[in-house]
Image 1: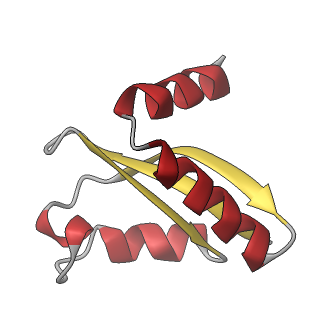
Image 2 (image 1 turned 180 degrees about the vertical axis):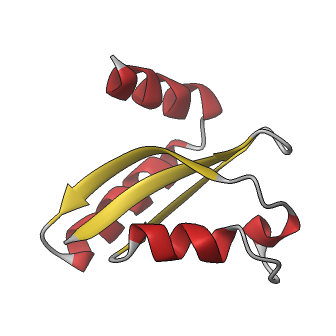
Length: 83
């Protein structure tokens, strides 16, 4: 199983969009002190996820959402998910 996911950091008030086959392991990596966008803070949490049968489908969904380039649209997706 592969996942498309969205993380949120309250410290930076930012979203991170990605895909993985190991959601919990990937979250631990994001919250570790490493180089890269998510390495600056350690309060990332999963706010949205979708499951896919293949890596290609999860990655395609990641690219689709990243093309939105809209924080508002991402927030709307998360709100629909929470409902």
